[in-house]
Length: 238
Image 1: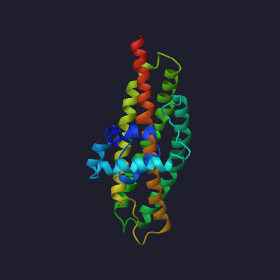
Image 2 (image 1 turned 135 degrees about the horizontal axis):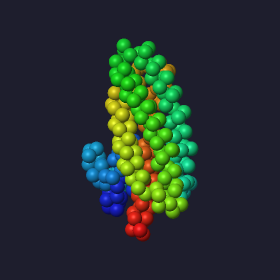
Image 3 (image 1 turned 30 degrees about the vertical axis):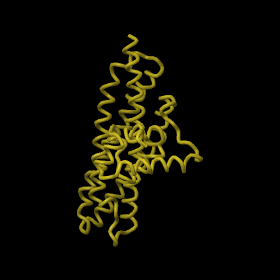
Image 4 (image 1 turned 90 degrees about the vertical axis):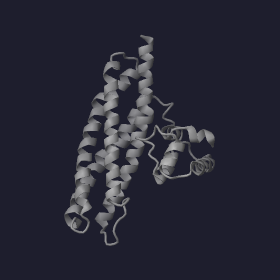
């Protein structure tokens, strides 16, 4: 148990992504905040670290017989990139336009009853534009450079680090926007009178947040650190 407390949230989820669902429920940020230890993160949230560690131990015991989660620390970087594009980028390209139309409609119809919808609409609009630009940058620049780096190209080194740092800043900004949407919507809690569209919007925003947590985790805590280690190896070799 003590070993778990000293590990970072990012390390814990990288070792077993099934832990992500528990951290989501507890409000422990393992993606943008993945560098904090479990003990420190629990104390910041007012949670008892020993209790959370015990729950993680119990979770491992009950899931031992389940299909093991993919360990992206050991798969090729190309495989991880393919997964991110096919899973998370595809999800965003499908959901961002749908949620944009939905929040426009709900804000127009119910904005007088729930004025926070107008700010949420603006926050989401900015988030959508930023995520679309972010995906283009990754697919057109960052991911090809990481693939080249893994294949042994030295030309990728000089260009890659500034792009990784910029991507991490963009992840932080997306995390702040999602946090604001959660706060505005009272943790995605619909009012009693909410129509089906209103409820669908809140469910969609919550699902977006959950997918973004896993998306950012796989980049911040697995893909980018592994790419940086390759960069350092190349620098040391030269």
